[in-house]
Amino acid sequence: MSIVVVGSFVQDYVWQVPTLPALGESRIGTFFSGPGGKGFNQAICCHRLAVATLFIAAIGDDVGATSARATAQANGLPCQWHVSDAPTAAASVVVAADGSNLICVALGANLSLTEEVVAEQSTAITQSKVLLTQLETNLSASFAALTLARAAGVLSVLNPAPINPLVTLELLALADVLTPNETEFAYLLKTLHGIELPINWWRSVDALLHGWARALSNLTVVITLGAEGAFVSHAPNQLRGDSAAYYRIASLPANAIDSTGAGDAFNAGLAAGLVKFSNQNFLSAVTYATKVAALSVERAGAALAMPNADEVQARWH
Image: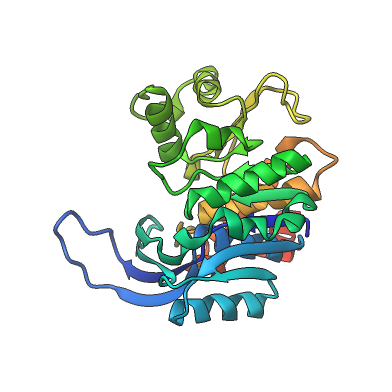
C-alpha cells in the first residue's frame, strides 16, 4: 500500500439546522446518520483519490461497526479491523446552512486501538510511502505507528485533531509533517510551550506565523485556515523542494454546504499528493490538498462526501 492510515472510525449522527443553536437554545432540524471519523474519512478519501490505501482501526460489534464494514466494502477500501468489547465510536454533529458545525465525539472502541494492534500491521506501515494518523484514538497507537514509520524512513503526517489533552512533544516529534487547524495550533502552542496567541493571530504577517510554527516544532507545519487557505512553515533544513521556508496558499472557491470533513479531505489530499507528486515540491502536494478540500464542502456528510481523483481533475485541470 502507498498510504497507511492509522486512525478512528466514528458513526456520525447529524442534525442540519438553518443556524447553529446558541447556548441553551433548541432548534428544529433534519437528521441523518452516516460513517465518519477522522481516520476513516481520510482513508476513504485517499482511496478515492486513486492511491492504494490501507486503513487500520478499531470498532465494536454493533450497528456502527456494520456501517463501517459496509461502507469500506462498498468503496473497495482495504481495512484491518480490531473488534473491541467497547461500542463503536459515535459523534453528534450539528451543521448550519452556511456549512459551519459543532461536533462532540465519544471515542468508544477507538481507545482499544493499541500499540499491540498496530504492531501486528508493522509490515504494511514500514513498506508504505506515507503514514497518516490523528489524535482520535488511543494515542499509543499513533505513537507506535509513527515510531515504525520513522525507523523505516517512511514519510509521516500527523493531523493533531481533535484537540487531545494527552498529546506530548515527544509524539509530535516523531512525525515529519504536522497539520493542525488554527484552533489546534493555538492549543498546542499554549499547552506545550506556554505561548498564548493574540486574537485573529493567523492574519498576522507571515514572518510571525513562521516564528510561532518554529516555536512549536522543528517539523514542517501546515496550518489549515478554512476559507482563508493554509500556511506552510518549514524548518531551515526541511524545505522539501520548496523555494521558500514559509508561504500561504489561498483556498479555492466553493459552494460550501457542509464543512464537517474539510480538514480530513485536506489531510487526505496532502497524503495523496505526497505520493502522486513525490518527484515535485511540497507546494504541489499542498495545492492538491486545497483542491480536494474545496470539493468536499460542496456536499453533505463526512466519509461519503469525499471527492475522487476524476472529480478533482475535472474541476481543476
